Image (cartoon, rainbow over all chains, first blue to last red):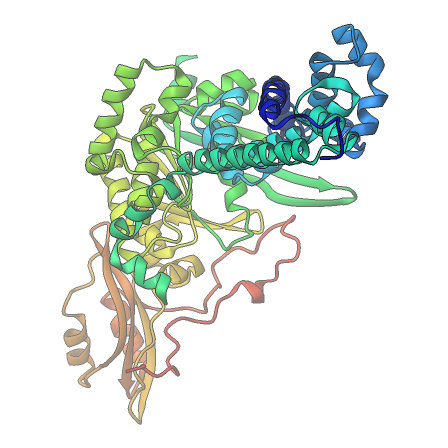
Length: 245
Length: 369
């Protein structure tokens, strides 16, 4: 109570909630870009690799390197390093628009690897099945790879979204706004513990909600989990006993 | 030109000098070595071989999922090896492939899985729905249309796989180890289904398997693939009736026989003709004026012909017993492997001794009660 700079309790909500809105907008726009670019890039890296639909070792190595480069830089450094590019795209280097660019770059690299990894988990036999059934390469990728990997991709998307919430807080420190900005300027620089606590609670709830929604969606997309209770009834006794033995 | 066409038509699948060579770094491995092979219309042709013999590579080369290094694959008159990627997609529709057990997409219901080839082709939903219903009915899965693969038994999953393979009305079915890993009852029912489909839809079937029982059950012809070469081939019945054929011997079930009494000698004979009298044991015993002892037998009817191998115990003149039995059509089993061709060049690493299995119906084996 000795600090006269503290935000009055009744104004905390007015400060934190619009910031939450900014964070959601930043992360939302970023994730749209990330999914739109990360899925094709992940599928490309996967299918140019050995045993892929279009084996291209050179393209595979090159895209793999670019993705790894994006993944290896700490976000703060990446953000600073691509400022010229950010300015070229958005015309500014502060604010939400400016934050979305480095967040998208980092997110795309992250998500490409998640998609590639998820596709690797799909039995290669599915691609053969689709090709034997007359599928074009794009149809193979869509139906035999991405569709089968969807629950796993959604799981990765959840992790990715949460990482982006974290990145948005880092972006906040360079004036992008959002929850991170409030936490740093009020909570950290002005020692306003109450604002700090409010941002923490909001971030925890936000992350928990994203995780909950992601888990639910992944489960809904997996028939084996969705109909778990029906399995025991439908599997014939002979099979069941073999499992038990 | 027309004559050439009809010539092609006579063979649904014709493989000429097909080779597949893998090169990794400095090593070069010949997986398929100049194979020639044909499947006629309405014929069920089997290719057998141990794992690693090149069976699955052959299966993938037939549909050009793997591009052969050299040679040609002509399916229903179309040379697949000369086709473009787009041409291949069209040509592949003439072949329905049934994969080993789990070729069903886990996030699609049985009906949606069966509809896949129709989706790829761009068939209208209404048309697709009608066709899928017809296919599921054909394989006896109508009541499981909305079940997901994990809710189906192995046999049911494979039935869905068969229905999917039939979706585009192919003229040829390629069964790549379709019954491997199924329980005996499901295996029998899938094989029965395949034969039924051949009869009803005039399909040719290429059966790639390591299960000799499946070959005896439905195949018309069989070829053995060993380290990339066909080492023996022929009509199943002919091979079963040939006591000197190693493949013929291997095709039969291996069963132990009883121990002979003192003074008896073992004689292993094979049903070598279609007209072996059913009462041959009595007739031969009468002729020899000494009863033959029945020590072991694996006899069945394949393609309407009784085939099999019998172990008898003989008292006295074994040579004479051999002659009497041969007259009745029961041929003594020759030295196993004598008639089979050695794998030719390119079959690196194979040795004849390694390939010969322990002789079936080994008389020294005791019957396990």
